[in-house]
Amino acid sequence: MLVFLVAFVMVVVVLDVREQASSPAPNGVTSYSHLSRNHTEGPVDYPQTPPVGGPHNPVPQNCGFYAEPVRNENAVHSLEHGAVWITYRPDLPGGQVETLRDLAQSNNYVLVSPYPGLPSPVVASAWGKQLRLNSANDPRLEQFVSAYSQGPQTPEPGAACSGGVGSPE
Image (cartoon, rainbow, N blue to C red):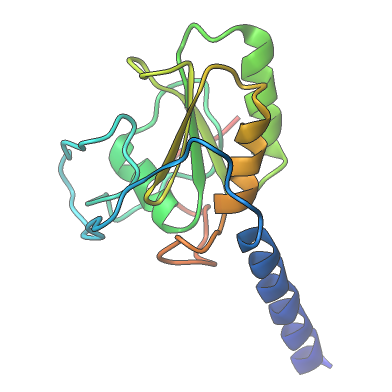
């Protein structure tokens, strides 16, 4: 019976990942390639703001909603595990911040945090993918999450987005 249950759960997870991977990407996504997956303890100077991959801390950031900025190096490790990291300018209107909080609370592979100095009010990032948005209410945000959370670009699909650092709200 236990073997049957384990096999059933594995099939459901595989089908869920395939379903998510088949979601179309929204317009406006920028892609990046040749990203290092090396672990490092020190700070990294990333070429994108926020980063979309590259060298990162050996410990991932726990997914969820954060009211304070998180370290790039830990968040990038979460991207390697298939997370979508949604960053927002600290002055984003409260209603839009609540929209992002709800999105993080309804998806186990979404990380949300403020990020000073963003090139647009909201930026959605996945491993090697990024979308700049003027609002958290842009429908492309949910399309991005659907297309890239545990999506085909994920170097380590199925790896946990918990058990790392940070205590999301």
